[in-house]
Amino acid sequence: METVPETSPPPQPARSWARLRRELVRSETDRVVSGLAGGIAARIGIPSVYVRAGFIVATLAGGAGIAAYLFGWALTLDDEAGVDHVEAPPATTRQRIAIGALYLGFLGVLQSAGIWFGNDVVWPVGAIVFGAAVIWDRTDDERRQRLTQFARSPEEGPGRARVIGGIALFAIGLGFLFSSVETFDLGPVLIAAAMAAAGFMLLFGPWVMRMANDLAEERRTRIRSEEKAEMAAHLHDSVLQTLALIQRSDDPKRMVTLARSQERELREWLYGEGTRQLGKVRGAIEAMADRVEKDHNIPIEVVVVGDAALDPDTDALVKAAGEAMTNAARHSGADKVSVYVEVNDTSVEAFVGDQGKGFDPEAIDPERRGIVESLRGRMERHGGTVEITSLPGEGTDVQLRVNRRLL
Amino acid sequence: MTSVYLVDDHELFLTGVRTELQQHFDVVGVSGDVDDAIAGIRRADPDVVLIDVHMPGGGGVSVIDNVIETHPEMVFLALSVSDAPEDVIAMIRAGARGYVTKSISPTELVDAVKRVGAGDAVFSPRLAGFVLDAFAGAVPKPTDPELDQLTPREREVLRQIARGFTYKQVASRLSISIKTVETHVSAVLRKLQLSSRHELARWASDRRIV
Image 1 (cartoon, helix red, strand yellow):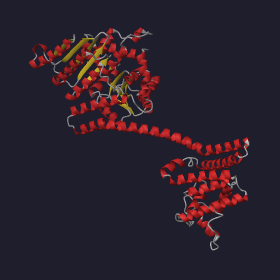
Image 2: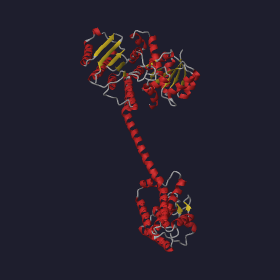
Image 3: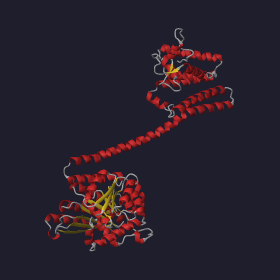
Image 4: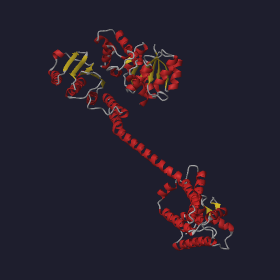
């Protein structure tokens, strides 16, 4: 399946030396060490991985692979522009068998010449190497790229030296290992094992580390992109929708309310105040104010001091405060409503105030009376109190108060 | 006429505020970043500096810190889109005489600048709420009771401000003079700057989180 320059192609007298040099060039694109194997592969039409396997296995034969490689490298030129080199079409099965036979013959010659690490070494390792080459040949490109990243280290030069040194150490170490196992000589076995291990580390160490790094980086990237997607989804559902609404709106008051409620929502989402605790007075009052603000297009300024759990009593206070806000928004004519809630150890107080037109509490119309009675009824059922102060032209103040339940 | 210096990295906003304030004040300079602001304020020596909280290069707090080293009497009014407590408290503790949010109406802003220019403190309802919250509850070990607690009267004034009343309305509701309201608010501001209450210290130290 493989050939080295000395044995193939069969020399033809008609071909001049210069011609041969043109035909066999070191590949620019398919290169691990110098591109020689890639060049040979292109010339004879087989995948370069088999050529490489051939060199590695031949190295086990007394280092002949390295000698052959150096020889081939000295004879060939880099594939430069202007060199009109020949590329063979993919070899046919018959050609492949022929190449393989030639290669085996070459090994046989080496064996009989005594340039050999021993049958126990060359044949099993040769089988492993060529088996790996077949697997490699059948692997898809993407996976190959991941596997070869170790060879394309960021520092191109030292990386190449590392690969060459690693392969040499690994192969020679493995060769000695197998040949000395026979004699059960502990010293050489250990040295050989150490050499093979060092070669292996040199070859695959950076790759293993890079795989680990890549995995961590991949995870980080995935988390980042998930976060980004979540943020994009959120902004799309909230801010972008609101901006679209504002562009379509021609009512300034409505625009202001939209912008305000969007601002509040975004701020809560950004700063995490967001998880508004709905089981609490503060959260409930703010949610109530939001709703009234949206329904009536009027800014509602909320200030809450302290906080308490929401129980039926405090819930009644929140609902009554909501009613008062709605009233102020609907009837006062003021440009904003102020809400102040203070929670202390014994009670919860809420003030809902506006600086609108106010009314005369003594002479109120039946509709207003209904509202006041509803407020009062709600609060009194929970042991609370309502106080309403209003003067025409001076605005209205609603003061609500309940005692806190003792635990 | 009161001279005002504007510091804000948001150009559009800066232009808007400048237009609003020019009718009432002498705008002596504008800056868009921290270093420029420190040099500019020292050079122009204005009566009031209107300053944004969040800016590249250290933010409003670092401008105040630097300017106060050479001009301890410089008056700052903080202006921000944020009303997160840590921002508010950090600016006040750095030395700002007041804090207003950018959603403030132009008239209210003019009023606030006039007020700090005259030596008073400016508390928005929201800021008054923060202060009441921070000073609520018992102090574990009051190192300085006078600074670590509010007097009942100060508390009452703050509650009225938190409810949205103007200083004038607060004065008439509590039957005291406007001057007295201002005195109380200034006293609260001083406590806010000097108190060792741990809530305030925490807010100040957490300010970089946002």
